[in-house]
Length: 350
Length: 274
Image (cartoon, rainbow over all chains, first blue to last red; front, side):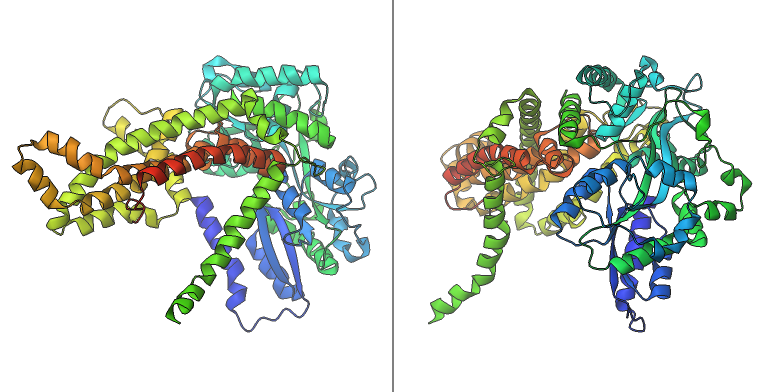
């Protein structure tokens, strides 16, 4: 319900400028394509007021849904916020524009280590400015399990039959099974993938449902005991249901970065850079962090967080050196994608 | 003169049909019958024989068939009651009540059922409060069938009701005059005359039920893959429009079969006029 309400609110907020005659956008417009519920709508309004640029804002649910739309170019977006491996794919397919860092002075607020991690998919830091980052882990309800959950392996424990929520996306589902077996989550080794597939098949009778965004609401509503979730959602769910605990599993997991990129065929490149620059302002990044609760790579914004518990939170800002086998998704190429997709389809259709 | 003017009035619909029906259909066939390099191939259509796809098709056929039969069994008596109320004038309100849910968005209604049916959902909370056994059907095929029946029931009731209303009361009186009892009248007169409505009702329930992917996603927990889900995922996740279109063509065959059936039984188009 809250989600629907937010959506309605957001729709109203974005519609409002259309009716206000006093507003002028002498500096043109910018088309932004971002994840669903991944920004504080107020910050868009603030940007419009400060820069006199009209923002046309659309949302997507997964990287895979975003890509064909951007590729087809039906709407020519200027700024998009894909994840690591998708950025690599877009770079490989020559879809991104090199950023003019002089136009994005606020990018210095982003911590150096995030640019370092970005090099895995953007080797020369030419195309992307980190916006959010996080891990994928297990969220569990401590009143519904017998012992603390610390491993992916426990998602195969028969006593949690019908109590497990898995991610309904190829890479995340396979990541869990591959990591459980100690393999790299970027493997294209067919033997390792077959073992992972078999594991996912074995797990299927125990799984209550394969969901994406609904993990959050279902965990809050005590619908399931254990769910695979993005760290950014964890803080929000804990605010709503204090029995929920988030862990980074021992076998390792995915560390991801979502970054702003500008498309090569952008009609409003200058405005796009202004938009990115605005989002890198410490107070704006803080506002967005408080709204969406996904970890911000903006060190200046982190300093501004007043609540010590949040600033030192192991969920929002984990000390990654404490964990083993952390990886970032790598683009697997078309053949790799197809292999994963066909194996996943076998799991789902069983 | 008058005729020509009337002809021009159909222009908006013709443009609509070409832009949103014919051209998209041509595109589906183009994508379905070509590969990524644009060469003609039947590979995408033949892909239906892969166990993964074939199984999804069979499950979809099975679930939509079950839903259609249950819809029919539920709808016929209801349509008869509504038609009998016709003379008393109360039926307007009844039909309004019946159509009312359709004023709300389909997606929203299905999401509402998810909240109702969940293990800790509204229905189970009430059942637990009353110390009754709880309902465990969410994320199972039963929930999918339930969702199909709920969403498509009006499409079965209305055409049957429509046909039943048009049956001349004198025919029923004549049957009774000639010595037929209620049961005989029903099977010899009412039922045969209502076949056009039944057939178009079946089509209007079966086709959307066969192609749905939203209901199985929301109420089936994405654990059961219907052919609609496979096609949807080919477009949205795997960006393989060729395979998605190829499988759509196969699905179209089933829809064409059911449309032919409608055309044969419902020659006057009685049932389809709501």
